[in-house]
Image 1 (cartoon, one colour):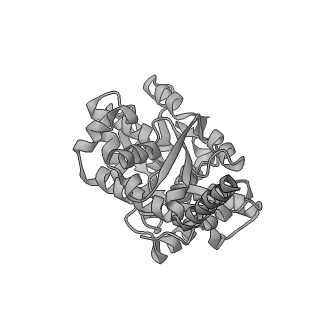
Image 2 (cartoon, rainbow, N blue to C red; image 1 turned 180 degrees about the vertical axis):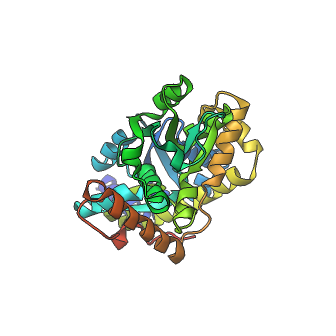
Image 3 (cartoon, rainbow, N blue to C red; image 1 turned 30 degrees about the vertical axis):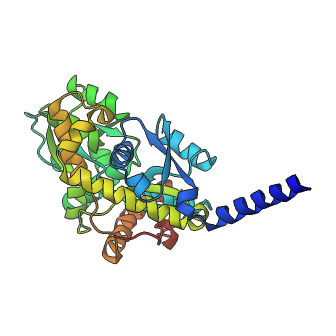
Length: 327
């Protein structure tokens, strides 16, 4: 009887402790990241400076092979969060899967050419062979098409010869002279620039030319909306910790030497290019103006990409962007 009484007291204490502790301190956040991906840089910096502990966080990082693997991991519940774009989130919501998005970066990519290339603008892509990361509905390519249609009355899909592939392969094809230009992800563009290749136009510059602005966050942290609502304190703590880490990456040059192994940079020049490129994409505000600009960008997706890109919806579902975080 005495043991039973003690056992009941211990069980009662555990129940009280469970419900009394802060949510963020009790739970871990499982995030899927890609090798050498910028989300890993942020988490590395967060841990190195103790920002996770300061905000009562436990981060479980799951390495994933590629973006498709990340999406599968999220859909199966293997992870709570991944890094992806809000266009995909909007499409998933239209299909009934309620995902939400917190901004992370405004960088996507740029068109690069050899230093001595005659290609100076989108107009010069006519009749040229361009490598495009992803496929014909890649969002960066959509924005380039939109700008060429407006300013040049030229459909790039017809004017240029398109080759689709993964970023490392396209970089090698460009270096081998088999491509005239590449439209690639920002980190692979940074590597090319460090090797002397020239930027023709970036996605940020294209968006600015289209009158939308160059601070639209295109990449972010993605999670299931119901999970986010159930773990609001955890998400806010994560957002605060990431902002602390991003501030260090934005202002402390020495931090990048510590981070060198995580970036996979092959030389000091590439590390410098990755640092500057990363900083260029840091979103410094996320409020009504930025959300309105994002809605404008989405309309371009609808007009140019159509249902093949956005699915059945022609307007952004308000829940696409999670309301629990603003800055």
